[in-house]
Image (cartoon, rainbow, N blue to C red; front, side):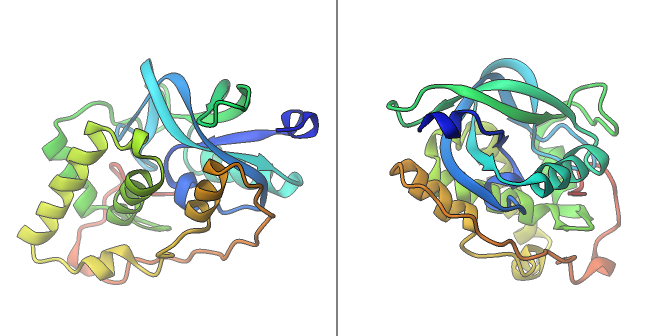
Length: 231
């Protein structure tokens, strides 16, 4: 990473930003931040971090242009209710030095904070919830797939257990997985970017397609705000 890139503004993605960044970016690289863990503890937008000991794996993106930062502020702060922080990012590539990144995080003071709950209850709520950007099932399963395939260090017990429980709920309730997953990308740009980043290959900025409401059968599930997507 040259001196120009280390002077750039970067953002750390550990939830939907991993598989759907939604903005143009320059370079990207896989790595982690310390003293945070990923949990489904935030109402509205979920799968955000809480301050504690640990490490959270994800992808750091180099922001290019003013539009990217404005997009993130709307998506994560105005709509998501998150707090902005600056933390140190540690690239997986040992040849790269740690550098500061923006972090959007949910805390107990965040709007619609849900807090801790038994995993089987969270799984049920995920199965029942949708928002303007799609269904919570899509959020969870795409994130789990991304971590499992691209960043196995980030496929932790919390995420793996929720994936298992949600898939079980879908089967028990005879729900259509394809409908719950909507029309989202099967091979997100972020996945390709992360794979290239792991090989230390610079990614050229790519246009992002606007996502629409991908939940197609809302009458089958009750509308709830708890742990729903709103990004």
